Amino acid sequence: MTNTQQQIKELEKKAHRELVEIQDPSALEAWRVLYIGRSGKLPEMLRNVKNLPDEEKRIVGKEGNALRRDLEEAYEEKRHAVSKDQEVGLPRVALPAGGAKWGHLHPLTLSMNRIIEIFSAMGFIIADGPEVEEGKYNFDALNIPLDHPARGEGDTFMIDPKSIGGEKDIVLRTQTSPMQIRSVQSMHLTPPFKLIAPGRVFRREKADATHESTFYQFEGLGISETISIADFKGIVAEFFTLFFQKEVTVRLRPSYFPFVEPGFEVDMSCVFCKEGCRICKHTGWIEVMGAGMVHPNVLKNMNIDPEKYQGFAFGGAIDRLTMIRHGVTDIRMFWSGDIRFLRQFS
Ligand code: FA5
Image (cartoon, rainbow, N blue to C red; front, side, top):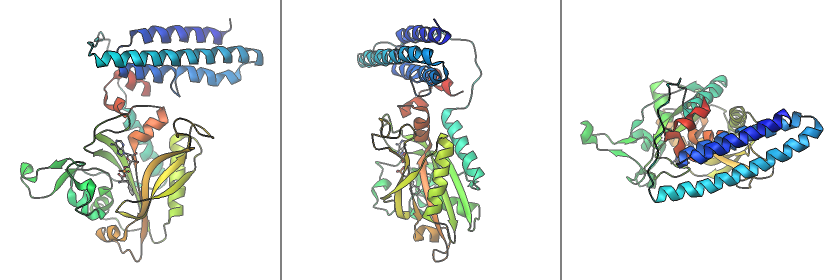
């Protein structure tokens, strides 16, 4: 038996041994990412098969693929068993306390740092602003009318002004877009400039595998006399290429946001396949952000002359990009506090 075959056997034993112990969905997700996720141990081993001598390549490739099928089936079976246990409310088993270990940055912080690093290198300045925001910045200055559905209590966490001894319309910001006007005002910016504003946002939404009520966005804004959609396309294609460490192209589809005109959804070419896969829903494209050319009314609210200047704005979710990058299938894992999930990002 060769070294690699030996390693496959050991991986098989270890993966099965650990799977038997699993009692809850978050531990199961951690197991999936560790062993059969895109950057997991088995896919990594299979990627290295190509470096083996021809004869060994065939045997090891066959055994590795058989193990992959075996682990995927075992995972599916366990997933059913665990969800049944959850339904009938079986007690969870507490893990014994282990020795203290060094901590590390949260995966969302790592992504945010990476986003800041990439845009800084492209000459963007970084802006930071409040999570508890005035309605004026979150809605009015962004050309969002009073009767817009997003302004309702159904979508926004409103704060009773009296509870904080004031009169103003205060909300938990629902997007990082208020940072467009706020940063220009507070940093006294005059064109040309490019800025990026990452931060936490809040929406009154029921959490599911792709939605959280608290998540992170990053806003981009670039204004000058001549900046164009072509500049925007080039900048974001470069950003996604650096973020995913894979050459990507982007395409724009018409869309509507009150604070841009024209507005678009940005798709990037799938970073996992060429001809369509589960992640890109067999289209070859993944939707990654909303964007557009800044609306003249918004430029006026920044005290910037729309006759002389123009600009692009964009906003994407850091959680969603992190999920794509690491093959995380449930956004709720980020807040689960499950140390076994988090440890994989050290
Ligand atoms: C916005 O928030 C706009 N502010 C984006 C924008 C900025 C458009 C500048 C134009 C110019 P949207 O509501 O689509 O757009 O949210 C942006 C991204 O946040 C979405 O692409 C989606 O990936 C992510 N997102 C939306 N809701 C949630 C949620 N509940 N949980 C996690 N991610 C979410």
